[in-house]
Image 1 (cartoon, helix red, strand yellow):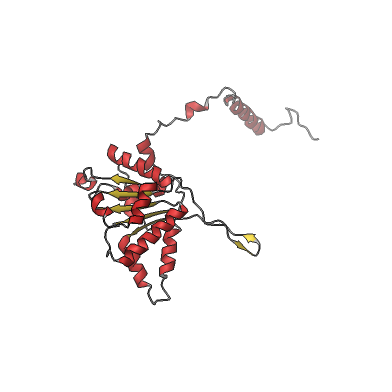
Image 2: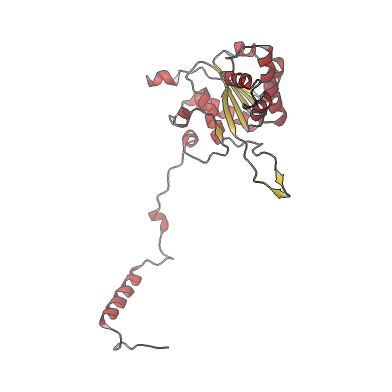
Length: 252
């Protein structure tokens, strides 16, 4: 091993080593350094604020209106109470009926449930190919309007290039959380009533939550639903009355 005496060390190198020693000496002792002083602790969030903070979405969200993703205004106590009740029903696999006048945040409740809920049936069944397990797929949360369901079904009649009625129904049944907005805006024919009842019944059997949104009163909307759906709601669901002041009017 080749060593150097102090006399053999170049003057520039000696100066550098001296400065390096001084820098090391100036560093704080790790055992004494208080890292907490350099890391401010955030104030605890209120439950309402926590709902609207950006967080990881557990499920793909399909066809939810973009404007609800940008709506970060904190709601009032009545909205918060309705959201809390609806969230509990959704996480238990039940049926939610939200009724009331326009602009009260019914669809925003649905959006926040899709974004934050811890749902039961979150993944499609495991698939295999050539004795190898394929990646497990996460069930999506799906938003639609009642009229869109039946327009898509009719659009698929005798058109092999479009999803069939069976495929449309199956897609809605398989969703982790299904939101049917404007559920009262439809033809009220036996065909539509039977299809809506079938979709909700299949989701009931699978214990997957469904949310129906309407601008009618609860009495008028109940008159549009089949006895089967009403029985399901009474058994595992609940109503959310949203008749506080419209948030849209407050913005004007």
